[in-house]
Length: 268
Image (cartoon, rainbow, N blue to C red; front, side):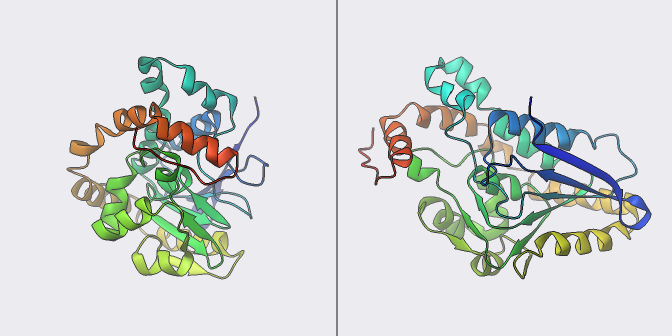
């Protein structure tokens, strides 16, 4: 089995910084089901780690992630699954983003190139995002006949408000530039191209210099307050996605994407 995720620990002041590198060496860093599992395992590996205060998550120099891999054999097998199997398989994404959100350590995403769909869902589950000025974000799910899932809507809502969340998700073909992402509040810092990781590490060093227990407890308090009501809506996330996956519009959206043509949606 190929390893897509590498973890480096004991970096920075007193060795309190870790780096998680996600790279499928495919140029786009697509999120296959196996990649989702490895990234989830990476987050969980810090659960009993008292020596790490900050974790920086980065992709490769050209992409943070292009989102879910529509060409992956395991992913494409979803169309043959019964509803029960499909619901179980669709929990991989929410499980990933929840694992990263619930980490005790402060988490920082270093984004270069592009961050699309599931990649953005992962990024907004982290505490901070640093982005290269020539990078862009995009949420293509609706254009593929799906809904934006992985509990991303509540997280985006907290960051940028209702109107911007609707704009980002519903206008699926529109890229969100680094400057727009900063103005909206989707990212906290924009830097020169190629320097997102360096800037993320600089931020990590500042955080790592703070008292670890106080930082961890502050993060927990803020997250509990901010996300207290999220589960009221997020429980339906997987079922909405499963339902949309069974629609004719979803089949048309994926076929149009793979065939590089404009989809023709019919609302069924």
